[in-house]
Length: 130
Image 1 (tube, rainbow, N blue to C red):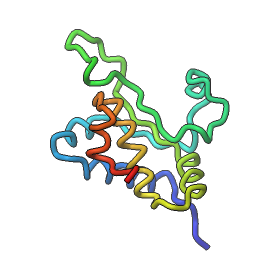
Image 2 (image 1 turned 60 degrees about the vertical axis):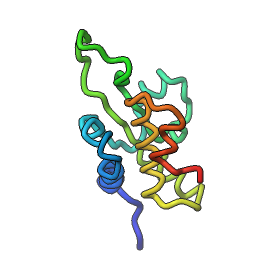
Image 3 (image 1 turned 180 degrees about the vertical axis):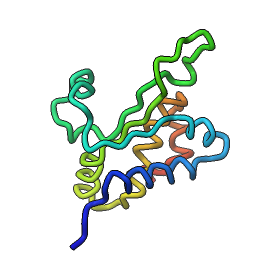
């Protein structure tokens, strides 16, 4: 019997997505912490006004590079959160993308918040909608 990909597999795919970024972005992306959990914690869902944990596949938590100042006091590491169960749910519901592609899409979307990328910037890196 096949088993659903576990947290370690989702993390492996996410790290692969970061490693595949263009060289100009890779070093900064590698400095962002990566957390993979089954679901978003309740406090996070409450803060975002989300009632169904399956609605959130990922989240960037931090200050975008375009808004950082050398005068800022660090509040903790910038972090990309990925949520395994909602990702797997979307993957099975869609049925038309690989898990690798879906995880890459979520990672790039969250990194877009970190880098302050425009939709055009995202499209150059993530060909998701083609």
